[in-house]
Amino acid sequence: MIILVLNSWSSSLKYQLFKMPENQVIAKGLVDKIALGNSILTHKIWDEKIVVNEEFKNHREALDAVLKIITTWDKAVLKDLSEIDAIGHRVVHGWEFFSSSTIINDNIIACIEKCKKLAPLHNPANKEWIMACLELMPNTPQVAVFDTAYHQTMSKDAYLYAIPYEYYEKYKIRKYWFHWTSHKYVSERACEILGKKIEDTKVITCHVWNGCSVAAIKWWKVIDTSMGFTPLEWLMMGTRSWDLDPAVITFLEKNENLSPAEMDDVLNKKSGVLWVSQISNDLRDIEDGFLAWKERETIVMNMYITKIAKYIWSYTAVLDWVNIIVLTAWILENSAVMRKLLVDKLGWLGITLDEVKNNFRWEERIISTPDSKTTVIVIPTNEEYMIAKDTYELVSK
Image (tube, rainbow, N blue to C red; front, top):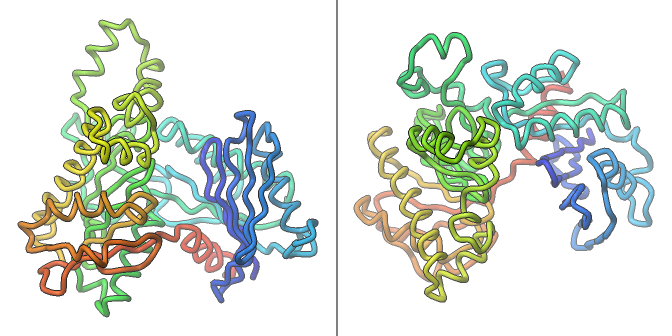
């Protein structure tokens, strides 16, 4: 079965074309800066890379370009679109509507639309990609894989907020959390590499990119998570704030004369790494400044590392110890500096870093020393594979 996986954001799209169940990647790529005036499509077939500089005004134009490069270019991997048997979509927020992935129909699209208020940067874009696929391939089955699905195993004492219970009953205000595909993949893969059964293991997974999250996983089930009602909770991100005293919001609304919509814009688009550093929302730039002893970049780096360490410490208590700590996503997969800064803060867990092994990028590798009481391992995430896997299983049935 040939499955097209779309892992999308508001202005970008990661895609992979899989042959399942063989888990063979036929082609993959990235469309960046959609509707921003300087779009770039980077398409890869094995070791060959094709770069297309073309302005894509909307999701429909970007998807059309991806499908054309797959089917009609000199290096086309398919004869036509009819060879695509199914499409799998990452959808960020599923509220309490979904505890698993599902075949997309009109009702599912309506539910995704209802959830957009909880993920305003993602769900509208997720829906746009689904609608574009319906227009271009109306007879091809589509599957929605929800970021929030894996974490429905949390108990009420872990996901409820200390606000009137009626707000949970009326609006389902609670912790949901995200990055399901990443955390599930790396926790299972780490146990596989280390020869452990995930149902017998206590794991903490750390996903750090422009979107960041930490999970406490006990005996395969998610016990607690760092994100909350929306992706705003937890660690500072590219343009999002982190944990915030709610009084700050009402204070700013009053003193800056901000409407709720304007305050939402501040928290989602005018906060985070970019607005604290006043330099960049890219942690690569922050790391460079940190290594050059620049003040703003050093502040941001210390905020980042300390916050991750705090969650690992607290989740060790929640799990009553931890067997494996998994580091994943772009930042922790690539930055030896950030890995060292983080692991150095975990010495009280009996963890020491192997400095030689830590000098690498983009690999599966244990970076703790053999005598460490807890194993620290880096696993490059593979969200697209998890989306393809769920899509294959649902469509096959």
